[in-house]
Length: 460
Picture (cartoon, one colour):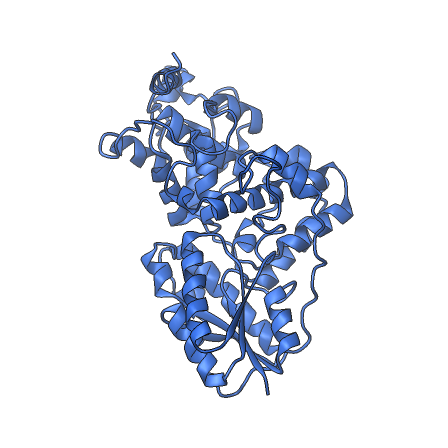
């Protein structure tokens, strides 16, 4: 009786899962395997919010498999060792897994392939599990480059690629009795999580997607996705990061729906694929400037007080502080706010983007290396932005995307009773009102920060 192993990583779903479907076609029995990898901890990727969300995903995946006659086999230890142990125990003939783009994932795949080759077991790595279009499928014509460095031409080519048809959830999964494992971890056992962390898992992800879709939010997405107070983004990023929902399915459904809102949503999904194809080609961009610059960032010691104020949401700029407080409370932040707080740290305070990216990865439940690091580089002007010197003014942006100050008041309660005209500039309040508010003065005058940035970039 032929047996295959499916190694789940950040593809924690049953619907539209090519590795699982391929394994079910190839074998009589399948071992759905997840390995709690100490290498993830050593690399600093297992922040509490992601640990808890992962625990939900694994519990949900196990329940879904049990409903189909199977179960999730959970092991703990080095991935190569544990996969090879399971292969030996069940005499598996092949292993299936999803492709990933980080340097860590590349090393894991290489070592696993070498170990399985020694045992005469085939490793099949499947694309379009974690992205809609696989990295490397579209490349610039005639440039000699192996990836796109600018989004718009990538989006045009990406939009022309036919997507595979989403695969249905299997009706049954038969698992060999001889293979045992651990119970999935429990989210309740994880300490240090954000108070309002979203629930993880494919069930929660698909229910959330259905509510968002049926509520008409997709049709309003183009007009409202930057509205900070309206909170009209999909909030699907954590489910995409853990693979609890399928990017192929989301793109397909949005295109079938049609309309400007769906087009804008698909464009955002394409940004995710864009960053993955950049990191696949340049794995060093997770820590090194994508475009070599001569930035002389302020040292962390020199900027320590400013960095602490930024992390705590006490910069004196309300929309920046609101975003940082939302991040700590939810483990998530509105995309427009992410751009504003990143621009403020890197260009107004002139602090290295890696400081901000590290803090985001400490808290974000959707802390994806490709999207987090490359978005930070985009804002910092070291990445793929074609206007690397642009600076986002938090006052102007706050007035534009939170005109009544509702987002600010939600997360900065010190300003709850401040009139709309002052809510983004509380330092302009009359003295008697200002003295009654426990809210800091601005860390820096925006004009001074801009002048310093221009000098540092040689753009006086």
